[in-house]
Amino acid sequence: MNLQTQIFHRGIAATLLQPNIDTDAIIPSREIQRVSKEGLGEALFSGWRYRSAENREPEPDFILNQDPYQGASILLAGDNFGCGSSREHAVWALKDFGVKAILAPSFGGIFFNNCALNGILAIELEENSIQRLAEWVRIDPRGNLLEIDLTAQRIRWREGKEIKFDIEPARRSLLLDGLDGIAATLRHEAAIAAFEDADRDRRPWVYEFPDG
Image (cartoon, rainbow, N blue to C red; front, side, top):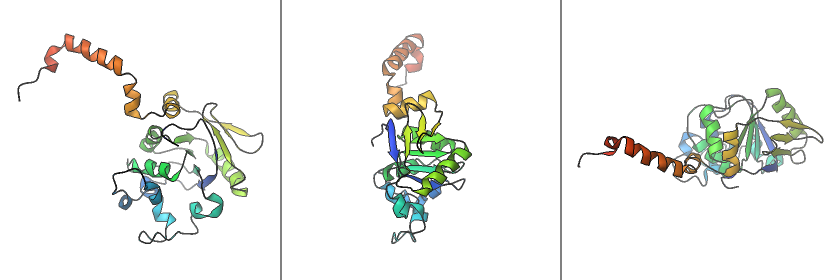
């Protein structure tokens, strides 16, 4: 998936329901030395996925290493997911790993915004809804797939069951159009240029700089 979020996604969901999973757990600081966003998926939850940081031997008890959850693209998370530091690497690592959507009762504020700016759908749902989805998914992770429809703003799970979710129109537009903050601003480039021209006429002294 590129920056544009899929309108409809059907995938395996993995459960990480403990509250307050912070950005250092999502990607430890030792893993963010590289400049590129590519390859950060290997470092996702590295403190939990690997028995040691040096040899990258998988920890078999961690859910994303277990066979039924291989290829998971949806996370069912606990309250305040993505709290802690403002590092955008946490979202980059999730995206590079293949995560398309995260469902949680609440998110760290900066992390929540970074998700929308990087093409990951972060959905706030009531805790009891998360629990119901988690219980159903655990019965057969590869068979009980979740279906997320961003246009209709609904999650389909067991046959005939769906959960509606809310999303701010501006955030939804960013996701559907595949725009980050700069690209969203540049959609108004003509209006910005017109404002600057008019402002230059009104306040020419603002645009006068001394030599040197």
